[in-house]
Image 1 (cartoon, rainbow, N blue to C red):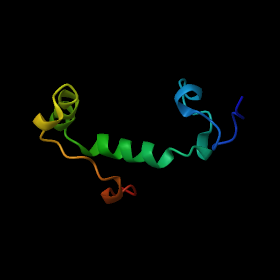
Image 2 (image 1 turned 90 degrees about the vertical axis):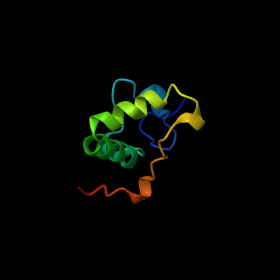
Image 3 (image 1 turned 60 degrees about the vertical axis):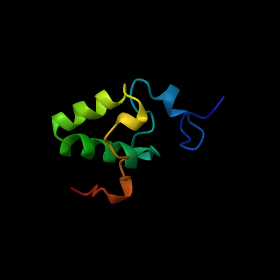
Length: 75
């Protein structure tokens, strides 16, 4: 059984179903912040296109992968 307070041994997929159990020590904060910035800065029409692309064949999608390194997370 893993220690629920150790960020290296926690399984976020199962432990954090009701919200993050690590708070400020969460190893995924960077990704959560990037996701929030993406949602806030992306037009709703584009978000809908992204969601619809989930159900199309990969070669039919016009969307490009998101480069997290190019995003400004300090906005």
